[in-house]
Image (cartoon, rainbow, N blue to C red; front, side):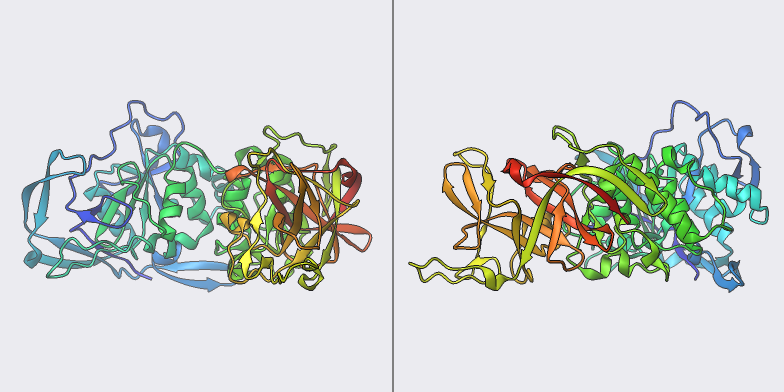
Length: 547
């Protein structure tokens, strides 16, 4: 695939895609200090020559792009080969005129407009395209993997792959190419918005390595066909677009993602080589990546089990996942899911989807879990647990003295309320030595789990007996005490109450396991209000072997 770059660039200044001529927003200030770390090699833009990184006494940029858009990609044996026939297109203009406009803060700034009748085009190779873009944005040195990593030296290539995150962390800014992003001028409305959702839907937005590159970057300049925007300047106008959420996350310099959000984004990312999907994700966690070997001659599934095991040791939130609202986004539907993925242990979440919002293990909660360890495919842990039985909706009984009818977690067609703390204090649920959940198709009603992108598959029916005292009951329930989001059906399971996670909106979650032959499987999560508690009689300690 080849790229078209139009030098008549308009600048996107807010998240709904509105643009204006460039020069209105302030650009990045030059850094005061030169980074101590530099890549082994850098490209000098003036003549596109590779020079030692150590010889460059100024800041550098890094390039992020989809390899498939740098030329024609063909498979050659187990490898892929890029052929660049010089069909990338650059559009330039002979004349421009200066104008003065107000920026979004009301300040007058110089900008320019282009004489569209002076348009000329020329075809170049990918390196020529990069040179032109860099010159337009004042970039002097750039890290470009195809030129800065020796591609035919396996040892050198794997060494550079292992430290790829450092190249982007230390870059002044990352130049991201998204040719699908464009602004379509019209005769009647020159300032129509750009299709900013193209970033989330672009080829760049599907690749595993580009996820790492964006995640690691301090600043990002997104450049499309004829529009661009700076991550530090764009106005955060709230929208419901896919791009809005993604850009908000990758452009945030405040908090880096935890395991859950990283795996959520990586779940459907693709790579030319399946191993690269793990290598890219491992670079997002430098403290655990040293536990794996960066080599392509190891079995992929063994690599995945080893790496995901390291993630669990780093952060138990890896154990928190569920059934996706949209089944097409689960790991099970991932584009490059290994054919033998059933070999992967259930605790990797391979059959469900993790949450985009990062849960927090422990925090102000009091975990009740003994030491845990992973040996091969097996996760060994001892935790407090609550036994659960699953029944069908038909098991719910209406009160004898009413005409109430119960459907799918509803009473007379109205959803039951989710149980929360009120003026009477935190609710306490009592019952038998186990909890009884009711299965649900979750059709037509919103549930609390949807806040986290998960589908509610079961609910806990409860009824108030007295202040703060609630009973788990199938007879005329009035509220929902908790939700389950499970990836497979079962009649009995356990809530791992010793492994609580803090979520947004004052909700906690805990993993759910079920017996599977001699061991257990992790099959999803349970969600309940943070103030809700259960009888101590329902909690029992178990030793679990989860595979």
